[in-house]
Length: 204
Image 1: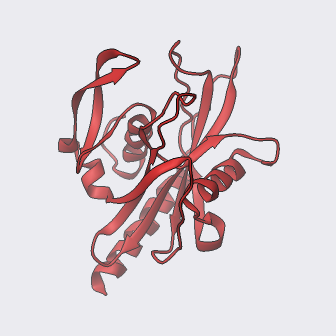
Image 2: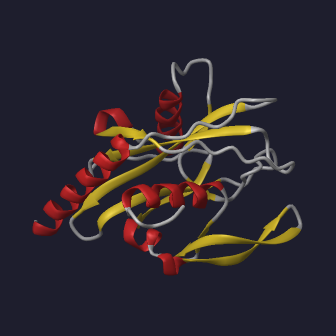
């Protein structure tokens, strides 16, 4: 019980840091579309704090096919805001109702990769905290999902330069390694920004 109380208190500290953060917005020049993802945390009695990841299903029309990512996707007309996009996509991909079982604390810096191999997307990450007993589900868009200890993910020793194959080209990128999962690209970048907020003194 003491471990859980400490974990909940730590979540509270993270929430305060996120709420106090003023996220940087990407330039909205040229061609682009908007998307949102959810960085979801929960407190548990054994792992203290966990973070949710998905492995995207393998699809020929998805430039992020098969990658480890956060739940999320493209902003649609039915969404009144990008926060609504993150909520809807999380429901569709992992069956998790963020507003029913948790709280959305705020946003992180937007990410806009400017590379010819990716679509012209602007991604706004949201940080959410949910109850440990919140129910989840499955979908065709996600091969699987898993919870990982936050401390293991943010441990600097977990990040190392890694050979990544992108469209038959091998490139060296920083990547987080956890139990055979390789987290790189926008997801790794978002985690780095998150760590800089919740772990003062750690550079972006």
